[in-house]
Amino acid sequence: LMSWPVLLIMHKGNFTIFRIIGLAFVLAMFLLIYSRGGLIVFCGQLVLLGIYYFKRIKLKTILMFLAVVLFAIGIFTLANNVRELQHQTIEIEEKVTFGGGESISSMQERKDFWAGSLELIEEKPLFGWGPFSFRYAYNPIQKTLLGNSDHPHNVFLKIGAENGLIAMGTFIAFLFVVFFTVIKRFPKLSKIRKDFVYLISVAIAGGFAHSLIDYNFNFIANLLLLFVLLIMLRSAVVVKDNQERKGFASVAISLLIVVFAIYELIVLALSQTINYNFLSFSFYPRDYYVSVAEKAVEQNDFGRALTALEEAEKLNSLDSRTNYLEGEIYCDEDFQSNNPLVCKSNFAQALAQNPMNNFTYYFDYVKLLSPNAVSENDLKIIQRATELLEIYFDYVELNLHFTAYTENVESAYELAQILGSYLSPEKADELKIKSEKMLSIARKLRTNKTF
Image (tube, rainbow, N blue to C red; front, side):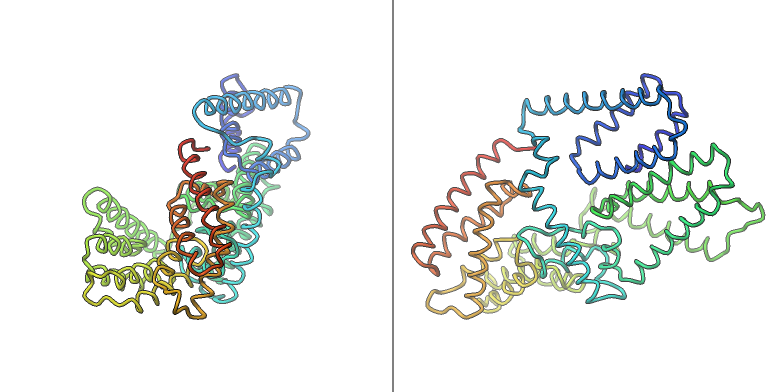
């Protein structure tokens, strides 16, 4: 969406067969993504270009456009046919008409994300929950099974929820300054420069329009391209003053950012090539301490695991994995401070932080219970687990979110087996039958994955 209008700048009206095929490949690759939102934005970009270039459209232009579309459809069809030789593929009609369960759940989940992000902003309006925190902060208020994400599928809501309204307002103000600068100076530009500015603006608008229903600026290539386009746009409309000099503060800040970026790059490279523990020197170690704890638990090095979990808790108190791993440690009979009550408490906290995504949490919690000593909170957790399983069986059968390929299937199956002790005989039998069918379907799907 941000790159194809830039390709039009390069053509300068001379459309040879090679350039037509090149544009057709770009369009075909775009179609193969199967993004309905992206396709809608693409059509919007075409409308914007049609309005601007309306008086310059000739028969040759229309024929060129049709040739690009026909070539693109041919490449798209060929790619699907080749892929079908080895894999099942998604039916085009089903995808376009929102006929699949994945499409329906995707639409509902986006609405839930937007509503959830507003709820998170209301709770911490000024500075938000922290960078990259949406998944963890949203999990406790998640509305649908497996309906979680690293972002709320909206760039502005993501900034608002994670960094607060001050950051979101500043970013919006920055975009308005760029927008009004372009609007104010556009009439004074030459024809060639106007075309350049308009095409760049359409590219930027496409990126932001799609980011209202999705979020792909978490990919550094997309984010870099966005700001490169913004720089090009501003440079094209602003008259440069030869006497302009950069202040010391701006130069110092720029150098500081460069040094910081290089440092983080070196740390990341060393952690990936020499020793993973180099990641502890990063200013943003993210999952490092959780990973260390997981490995330590596997090696029965419980002291090291607890130390790592303590650091992980300081960095991210919202992560359910820290409580779950601590529960595993206190449940392990090889741990000298083994304590089933502490273990159960940690599992309960993990479920409170992340109640709708991981059946392993439910299985390990229920496994600790005794049918003769079930508390009111235990019954609530058993009821929720049963309700989620009923939904999950359908998810696996439809393979929503490709869930049939995850280990969650096995955890759900094991959970269904042990829940029988707390349910009526009829309900217990029903769960076991459905779980066996679910496991069978998942194994069949794994042998013939759909792409």
